[in-house]
Each structure stands twice: as structure tokens, then as C-alpha cells.
Length: 293
Image (cartoon, rainbow, N blue to C red; front, side):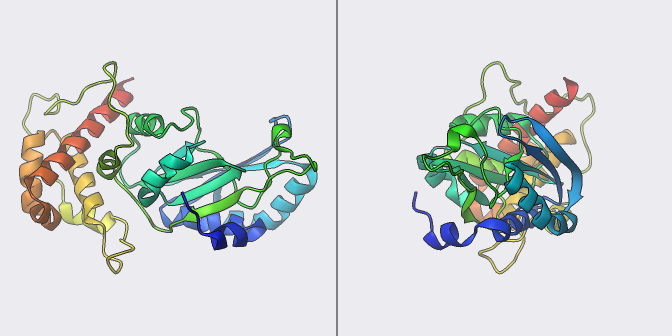
């Protein structure tokens, strides 16, 4: 994958740290926890639940001290969105998913990490399958080294005794994706037999009578970067379908109703509506299973 050299060269040090926080905030990550570790990977400091502005104010002194003490600076973003960390992602996979990620880091020479943001509720099953399909580290915890800081690990020290700096490779503010889009890229591993399989209807003895508001889902969808700031209808469609599935509607009913609610569904046809409803219902079923266990 070819990366723009200006991004690689320009975003170093404190400016890179600020830019990284800003791009995370642009997709909904609005709170941050910070962990400091030493060369032995031992925890030596912690900040909990910092706001974006609060962390920005603390960063200059934090980074200076960390560099002087050879401490690693890890941030864990949180917010009302699903953020999936693809650590140690092969470069050839990055090329396949580049249109769906909002951030790519190089944590050490040749070691890449990508981040994906979804407006849908947290789905551990999807995150696990995406990591597997992208051949990324399955144990990645959602905490990452902040751009512009140094990677203080003995095995990362070069022959001159220097440690690598965490660098931007690419950033796309505001870019969100959906489970449907990721599935379409072919980078999501299939559901394993041991996992809970999707059912066409919610396990309930009563048939639902109400539908969620598609208009509200559209109003809550992130803005498109390519369509003059209009809400992304594909995310609104997926979110609406997931809510409908959680309310007990069958996949067939959801797909049929989506054609009535969504201009994008009418434009793309019944296959789009069915695919979106099917993937949303599968995710809703996995979420229910996770809550029960």
C-alpha cells in the first residue's frame, strides 16, 4: 500500500498527538484513558476518562516527561460508537480495507495498526471476526500508543540505540463504516459453527406492532465526506434494521419495510434491503447472546 509521504513526514511529535485525538473525536471517540508503561511493560501511570480538551491541555507536559523517562503513552478511546483496533495488520490487508478505516498508524517500522468506527452498538462477534479476517492481533485491547510518542521496547531499539516514533500513515476524519460494508470487502471471517447462529425472528411469543423511526436513525448517522455533508444513509439503514430486529421483527419484514422507509434501499433494490436486514439481524442476535452470557 502506498502512503502519502507528506503525512508520514509532517505529523511527528506533539502535533501528531493532537491530530490523532482530533481524528478519533471526529468519529465519536470523546473520552480517553491514558496508561504509561516503562521499558519492562510495567504500568507506571494512569489517567482515567479524560475529555478531549482536558487531555490536550495535559499532553505537552505528559509527552515531555514520558520521553525523558522512557515511558510509553497508551490511549484508550471511548464513546457512543464502536471502535475496532486492527493491530499488526499486514500491509496488503490495509490496501483492501483502506476505504473503511479512519486511522492508520505505524507503531514501529513495518508494523501497522488500523482503526475502524461503526455507528452500530458494540458487537464483539463482528470485532473478533474482522480481526481474524484481517489477520490482525486477536488480543488487541483497544488501547494504542499515541502518534508522536516513542515506542520504548528493547526489541525496537535500533543499532544506534534509538527508539522508533509512532507515526501517522493515514487519517480520514469523520469516516464511519458499517458491518455490511466490511462484509462486502470480504475481510470479515465467517461465523463459526460454535457461535450463535442468526434466527429470522426474535424469540418472543408476541408479534411486534411498532417500527423504529428511520428519520431519527438518519439524523443520528455520521455525515458523508463525499456527499456535501449529508448523513450516510447506509449507516442509518443498518442501525434502523438492527433496532427493528431487537424489537422482534423478522428479516423478511424488516427488508420489506426498509424499502418503504429508505430512499437508498429503493435506489439499490431488494437485494440491498435484504442484505442489510440480514446482517443487522445477525449482529443483533450475537449481541443478545453476549448479554445472556
